[in-house]
Amino acid sequence: MRVPVLTYHAVNIAGNDYATNDHVALASDLRTINRLGLRVVPLQWVVEQRLGLTTRDLSACVALSCDDGSDFDFRDLEFREHGLQRSFFNILGDFVSEHGAAEQPHLNMTSFVIASPEARAHIDRGALDGRGWMSEDWWPEAETSGLMTIGNHSWDHNHPAIPAPGVDGMPRGSFLDVDNEKRADAEIADAARYINARIAPRRSRLFCYPFSHIPAFVHDDYLPRRGADIGLLAAFGDGAVPVTMASDIWNLPRYICGWHWRDPQALCGILDASAQA
Ligand SMILES: [Zn+2]
Image (tube, rainbow, N blue to C red; front, side, top):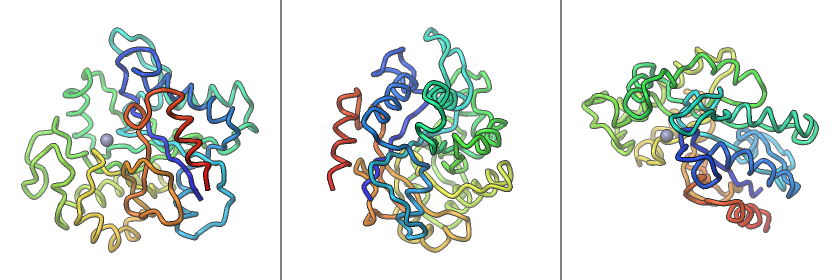
């Protein structure tokens, strides 16, 4: 297995071309992936394979994720001077409408959302425009649509837009400060409980580290010990290599749009490299 995991941020909207807009990039990348004869599969399939729970043929496959769970993941919205933005969810739907459901029968993107409503309200005001763009009402519909899966991106991202301190006196702005049981329970287990209650009877199975910060306590101790109880199968960082059977289950690698690639040619390079056995 050598599956590249591609990651997008729906609030990366600084213009309306590939380099400045992750929505434009995703729409283009889906067509590139399809043209190259690659299959998009749910991120959870990659994890299940890595864990030995399944023996699917995942050769020539790609998985998709997106982070932070703003409403731009799910609904079309006007953004500042850049106008109407097609949501990631609707970009996936557009692909199905254009090519038919059989072309990419397992097309799916995992949306890693922030659980806490208070945290989302602060982020909405502090990092967006205070327009209510960090809601949760779309999570169940996304989850049951078959096109999106809801993942766990922590309780509050320990985001700098949220009043300090966090639980147990934690300073804001870095996930590396999640360095003990109390903080990890608050950031990971509480988030799982909240998200799972909203998408029940489904459950979030995957965690993604905020800021791609991998605290040693969480990675080495907390998740290996507590992950299964919380319902988590794996956690994702930003390693920028394909997922293989040797990948670290509590720090699975992903490629980030706008960082690890900025144009379709660079994406082709990532996809070509992943195809080499
Ligand atoms: Zn994030």
